[in-house]
Image 1 (cartoon, rainbow, N blue to C red):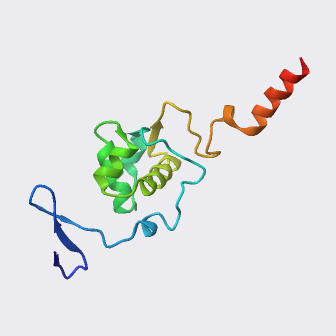
Image 2: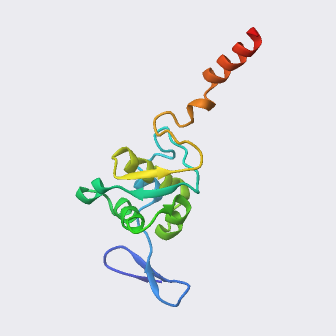
Image 3: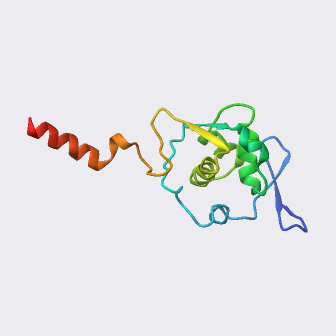
Length: 137
């Protein structure tokens, strides 16, 4: 590995070339958050960039990279993790942040609510109400 004056190091990749390694720790990328605000995105969830992302300014490099990769085609959360060389948990937080900003739309086979973290049909209060209704019969 060779060090550069920018504080970054380069390491060989699988194809004999060089890639830049990160000097920023994953917890710094997410502001110390380990979970997205109320969202637990499945790894197979697809990310679609919305037209509002064209006016996005002031985003950190990782969020810009997500918009760039998903701008051409739908990309899964797992694929984004691999493309960005970031842990899956970090990418989940960043994707949820971009969805909150309405720069992306998340497509999933399971309903994803970014505010409650789960489908309303799976909430405990709904299940208790159904059980009480059945018991009343």
